Length: 357
Image (cartoon, rainbow, N blue to C red):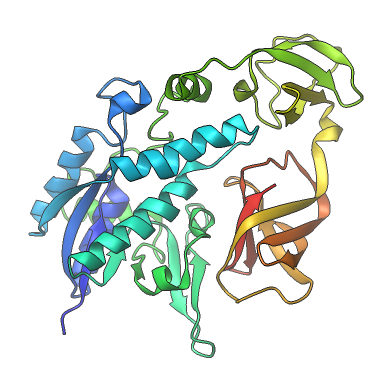
C-alpha cells in the first residue's frame, strides 16, 4: 500500500527540501500552503508578510518542479481564533506568549493533520529541524533535537501528542542548514538562497503593542511604574508595551539600570527592579504535555529551557498535579517570564513542557 503525505510548504527553502526528501522516500505527496491570515487582520500592508503571494508562488514553483500537486488551504478562521486571539489575551493578562508554538499546536499539526486524514493522507511533513523516533521498548514516540543544534526547533514542537508524532515526518532532522541550501541549489529551487523569516507573521514590524490595540479595538491605559518595595517612579504607557527583562523604552532615568521585573494587571502596574532582582530559581508550569513518559513519578533531573533562545540549564522537575510541573534550577535564571514555554530535555530527547505561570 502506497504511503501518502501532505507537505506543509511555506515557500521557504526548508519546507521545499523537505518536500523533495519525502518524495525521494517513495511517498505519494502533495504540497500545501496554509493561508493563515489576511493582512487586513493584522493592519499591515499586503506585501509585508511571510504569508505573501510571493511565498505561495515560491511554494507552487517548487511543487511544480517536483511534479507534485499543490493546494492552498484556508485556515484563517482557525488561525484568528487559536493564535491571534490567544496572543492578544495573553498580553492582556500581563504574559509574553510565543504564538509560533500555538500555531504549531493548533494549526500546523492538529488542524492540518485532521484535514490530511479527511482527504486520505496518512502523514504530514514539515521543514522543522527536529527528529521523531519510536522507542522500541516502550512503543512511545519520541521527539528529539535536530542534529544541527544551531537550528534545532524541538522547543517549539513540545506540545505534539503521541498520535501526532506517529504521523509526522521531519526529513531535515539529520541535516545542517548549509546542506539543505546546497540540496535546494542542486535541484534548481527558486528559493535556494531565500532568507529565513524572523518575525511573527502577523506582526512583521515587531510592534506588538500597536497590533494588539488595533486587533482588540481598545487603548490600554497608562498606570504607575513601581519598585519592588512599592516605590512609585512614574507612569507607563499601558502594560502591553512591556515584558519581563526589558530595560529600554521605559522613558525614565535612574542612577543604575532598571528592568521590568513583573506586570501586575489587577493594579495596572509595571514593576521595576535592579538586574539582580530579575533572577529566580523556581517556576511553575501548567497546560503541560509530556512526550517521553506518561507522567513524572518523582523528582527528575533534566535540562530546561524557559524561552527559545535560552541555553538549557540543569534543573530538577517534579510533577505536582495532573497538569502542573514545578521546576527548581541549580542556578538562578534571568527573566523567567509568564506565558513563555518551559521545555525539558534528557539529553537530546524532549521530556515535555508547559506554559510558565
